[in-house]
Image (cartoon, rainbow, N blue to C red):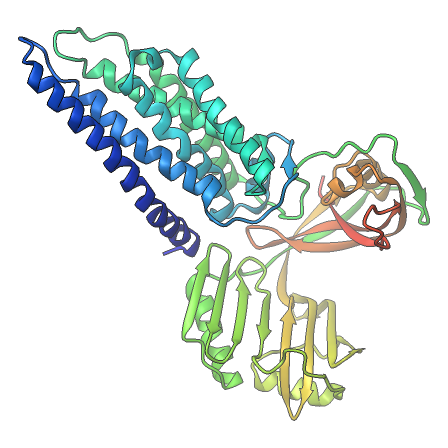
Length: 473
């Protein structure tokens, strides 16, 4: 089972105890109400079992919501918020992983029971203009409490998805009430209540179907929103090139779960370690040995991996020769192109950099970094080396066009420059590079080296960083 799904189930299991307690208390109240009803012996009266069961379910549901949103241990601190509507949807689209989409869909599903149970509980809530504001109000209360208590962040995306979940639940409840009316009541029109579920289903079909029809995948480094950078003082230490330009895109062979398992088993065998545990996420497998502290993290879409040996820790590194390191890497089953540039970074860290070196009809690109500890052992290995096949020649943005998008805030990490204490940005350099997309293609991107200008309120010295902007038109 996907480990993120397993985490959700464990969370619901823990919250379920609170839900059972709340439901039991409510059930006792229903039992007492039924006893009083029975003692009155009113002729022809029928106990409202539907409303009673809805009340019990609603009590248990609200207990789960309180636990999930306010009582469980979550990250964050007071004052954190997201005011960019649909940010979570755009991040899910860019990364296109099950975990990211579940973050969106579970926020919808969380409030679906509320919209379903309220109309069953009272006729007042059989009006959309009563139930939907109720769902929005509960969501607003929770988001405000999370903001003030530091149990999460105030997120306008949650307000939207929670209200959408309430609307879907309301539609389903009204369909049920129309198709199966209470005794003595006639069926009434129900088609209008199909509009919301059908529209939601078509929207999801458009999103996931559209992704499958796309030639390329999505870039996780693509901007999730456009930042407001008006008034920012841009300083140039680099002159953009003019003129159209075409470059090749490349295709790799992403890992599957099966091929990743085979890679992990071979790596462990060559390294002389064992990985008794494996944790599966949609784009990542973590091979682990908790008793020794050895870990291997493998990413599917770009075939990158990170290896951590238990004995590395803060142990000092050693400088090794290129030939000795190549020989030891080969024993681990790691092939490094002969043309790769070798360098020693200090503290035991060495790197091999391959920049589209040809191997027959394919090319090798990426960097392998390793921390050598002497005696033929590595404490850590990080690799982004990938064997790529040229796929298609594409026209890309000129550097001048890319610079214009940069100034408009259409790049990954632009939110940093929205901070009030940043008055300007100094562009130091621009280089064309490649990043793997969610379908295993390597797309061109511009990498801007930018130094933020301003006075950090924490007193920290601002440093230049790299910011990514997709280059395909």
